[in-house]
Length: 188
Image (tube, one colour):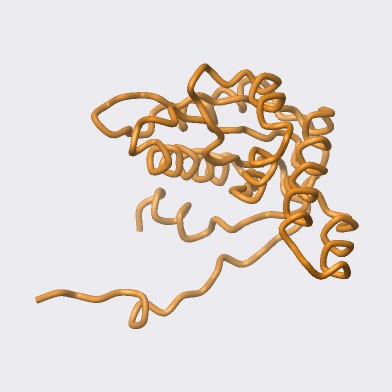
């Protein structure tokens, strides 16, 4: 099996990281993996914002995400449970990369997904763990949307697409299993 197929097979979502700092060289490799992803019509409309773990905006995003989710719930117990969740959306990864994209280009969300998968596979190949993050999107639906977009330096007319936390694993997790007989159809 090729090295790429091994990396795909071995990758899993990691939710516990050592706090070792990722070097600029490693972060650059991850970013280049994302930048090398194909985009529809070679538009290259994606933008990447790199945030080191512990940056105050991450806690603000987490708080806003929880408040937006809680506001959509009717049951007070469910609201309280959301607001009091101890974990943060990035599980203390030492680096979080936010991918934002042109909101008027119809393929931006697909392009962002491809880019973040490239980053996840690059991370795995470098001995790192990663967690692809969509849940923080809710923070960008709240009252602080413009603040977050400015703080994360999104270009004009861009919106949040997806994020990925990356760092040295402090846990091991088996890749998920699947049933190709159930998940695949061959059309003849």
